[in-house]
Structure formats: C-alpha cells, structure tokens
Image (cartoon, rainbow, N blue to C red; front, side, top):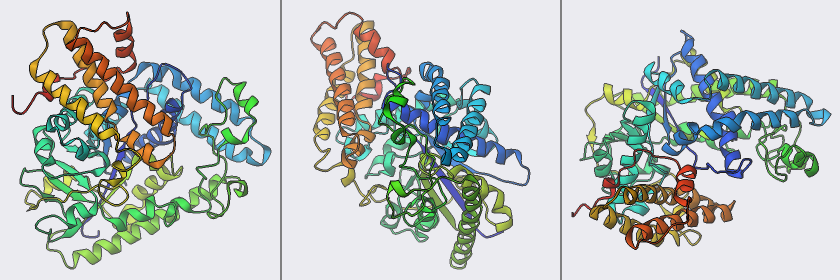
Length: 522
C-alpha cells in the first residue's frame, strides 16, 4: 500500500429554489441534480460499502438549503411526474439515438425505484453511510453566503454559521464538525466564528495554505491549525485537474456524454408543450457524446453507453496510478504520511459529467490493486492530533483565487444592500421584540435576509447566464425583508394572508434564532 492517502471531498449544494409553480426553471435544477447526481452518488457509495473488497471513504458537504429541498413535501410529490414526463419524451427520440434513449430511460427508472423505496427521503441514507464510516458529512453556510463579503457585520457571519449547524443537527441527528466554506472563501478572523459554531475543520484552495503565515512545512500535503484551533486542508491541483477540467481532463473525452446538447432543444416546441412542459429549455435529456470537443453542437454523434463505461475504467486506473506515484514521491521527503485533498462540486459527478458516479465506483473498485487508500478529513484529524500552527491566507477557489468573482462590476451593487439590511437586523435582534407576532415576523425576516445573501445569485450575475432570475431573487428576498421589518418597527399593515403565504414559500430553518444576530457590543 502506498504511503499516505487520498481524501476526496464533494460539496453538494443548490440554492433554495423551491417555488409555488411546477415546471419552473429552478425546480428543474433540483430535479436534474437529484436524478443525475444525488441518487447515483448514493447508489455508488452504498454498493461500494456493501462490497467487502472495497474500502470507500468520502468527505461530503450537504448545504442547508439542499437539505431543505430534499425534505420538502411538495417537491417530493412532484418528482415522479417530472420523471414520467421525460420518460415519455425519450420514447420520441430519433431512431439514431434510440440506444442512448433506452439507456437513459433505464437509468431514470432505476433511480426512481430507489427513490420510491425510501419514500423519497434521502437524508437517512446519507446518515447511515456516515454511521458506517463511509461518509464524513460537512455543513456549509446556511444559504451559501459569501462570508468575506458579509464580514462588515460579524453577527451576520455568525448567523450564517450557527443557523447552518443547527439545521444540519436537526435533519441529520448529529452536529457537524467540519464545514465546506462557501466557495472555499476565507478571511482573517473567520476561524473565530467557525469555532463559535462548533466547527473544527474546512477545506481551502491551495494558496490559502501555501501563503499562510508561517509557510506550512508540508505545503498542501498536510493540514494546518489556526490559533483558534480550527484545522484547514489545502486543495491539491494535481489530484483535481484531471477530474474537473472539461478541456484538459477526463470529462472532455469524446466518448463521454455531451452536456450542452439536449432533447429540449432538438424536439419541436409543440411536441414538448403538448406534454405540459415549457419549450426551449434543457430538459435533462442528453443523447449525444462529446465527439470532437472543438466541434459545434450540430456535429455531436449519438451517445454509446458501452464505450463511455469502458472509458471510466481506463480513466480511474490512470487517475489512481497518478496518485500512487504522487504519494510515493512525496513520502520520500516527508516525515509524516502525505495527504492528497481533492475537493469538487458534487454536481460534477453525474450532472456536468454524466459518467462521474461510474468513475467514482471504478476508483473504489480499483483502489486495492493500485495500492491507494482513501480517507476522510475527520479520520485524518483523529489520527494526527499534532498540527503545525499557521494563519491561513485569505482566499477562495473562484477564478483569480480571491474574492473578485463575487465583487465586480456585475454584482457589487449587492454589497451595500446586504450591509444595510444586516445592520438593521443586528439592531432589531439586539433590542428584541414585544409580542409573539413580532417574533414571528422577525423569524421570517431572518430567513429572507439569509436567502438574499446566497452567493449563487452573485455567481450567476458574474457568469452572465440567467441574470434576470438572479437579480429577481435577490430583490425579492430583500423586499420581503424590508416589509417584515417595517411591520415590526412602524406597524405597517401587511396584506391579509401575506405572511402565511411567505412562510409556506420560504419554509426553511424552523429553528432560526434571532439571538444569532444580536450585537457583539450589547
């Protein structure tokens, strides 16, 4: 067995995209991630755990907003119909894509059956994998707020973290010790609030450790600990590039499924609308392969599942051989066993890269013969209690490595809006309220403020994709926040039934605590 170990870390997250209307774009995001990513990942991990020849281990973050979506009864009720509509459309696929359509239909039916066997409740399955030692489950910011841009009011950061820990504990039955910091973003002093919330470790991009003070003697190949007692792991680019890069990595292989061509664009609009579905939108029905990566979508060839499955075996072997050589090389110059930390968005595995879960299954299957050992971040800390004390460097894993992707000409207007609302929330929570109704209003104001802080909307504004939706989401939650505050402060009347409807629509964080925003100076 090679000296050292490989820690795969997946971050499963979606913004809170629940809405009253079926077939919304945001609802499609959730259902596509559910059928393509979360259900296949559970299948992969459960099958690997049941095989005595395998020793799968994985660290996985489940964001509080994703957990809220997974437990939502309305979404669980709608999901089977969403799948059935797509199964019907797959029957109408052109003849040259029949094999690909039958393969996708079989996958949909298999995962839907697994979903139905657990009554659509996936969270106990994640919990059971943690109990078995297969998963080390992390939390995230409550709504994936980009914490360095919220630091003007530390109470706001504290509320993001405390709310997340409380919700994780409520739904999974165990308090998290680790966190996937939103966008892996860190600023000086954040470890104080992590410790305050009971969080003891997180992942940073490589430069978060490499530029730490003092410079860690083992670079990103061993965790460090801050003066607040919080451990940090650094991303290793050699272990991540082959997996996440569509240009230079495995997902760009010509035999893998093409992400951007979708039956939703290929079928006539009237054919889709006859199913009661909105036309001119990706439907999660992709029947082509990458083919020539430099070619246009019109030149994509039909997907051939057997060829793609064979490539996952080859790529898993290549990846493990590379990690074994890397560990062997590192162990020659280290007094402790080296650690390779490979963090990814979970949605890469299955959604963006359809064959990703199969690739993971091959990693677990081939690891014993390749002499590569998997570990989790929690296991590393349990086995290595003595760490070098360093101050991590401010960083993120976004483009440029720091904060500019979430603070630029496309989204900077949000920052003063967050600041103004955060200041008012801290003041209001510090003074308290005088009635049960006002407390109820304050609880909902906290939810709306947290939802407005989601980094997903800032990311979309910068990426230039569904920018109108992102702007509308931010403005919607802020407008609701201010109406709720006005109802408390100035007794402004709310329309009859408005609060009840709002509580049904933004129905997350039932244990929200206004005290989390109370002033540090009070």
